[in-house]
Length: 341
Image (tube, rainbow, N blue to C red):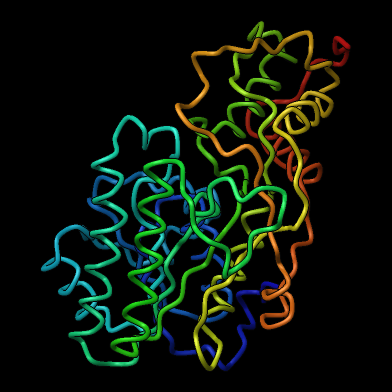
């Protein structure tokens, strides 16, 4: 639960957190959560002066965050930034974040995720002070794990350049934790959504299209494979788990998810239902949008997070979709009084 900014809990007063990749969805929500706890927050971006930081602006916190330019793939830049900020905690949310784009840009994806994580770990090793590191993993690391829910010890079989890069970073963190006693942990997050998702992600693409079709601004929506199944959660809840992971006496990796898996078709149906439409009249299946290799089903074993962190998700996919639709309508305008069924 977030604490009101006017009354932060005293145990976090005076702490400083660096958020690498603060310009993304998770970075913005994490910054808001840490500010509410009394942290001083420093956010990094490749070019902080040119960055738009729309997420921070949407949450009304841009002026409360210190923004600095830093390139994670440049070791000197990384080390200098951490030395100057002198943080208690570092959250690595940076790097290429799109699975689909990773097929088109595999080298950039690998470098931004793997080299970036390695530079952070090396910088923290050389700083030789007790800085705790959260590293963003992904359920994409598991690949097709079958019908069995994936947990912290499930074998990794990634099927995308993005998943391969995240799996590599996962093992980097584990190696530095064991070899150098760096207090670091990976959060293996399943899909989590919010109104801050850009439209290049299929979930926001669906929500935006449903709202535009309902207003008569668009006729149809083209999508790829609707049979894929995922565990979709609410991003503002997941950043709370990130913070809780770094408050443990001994840091370890955690799977963070709702534990409920549904199909993309179900997600589409829910989005169109929220605006009073039958999705089957408007969605066109386009084979050109199917990825070269795809994970058929993502299931999560959330027991460790529940037992050791005391964290469980409150919102599952139907509620997440409705909240995203409501936010989109509030931003772009309400629907006509009469809506086509």
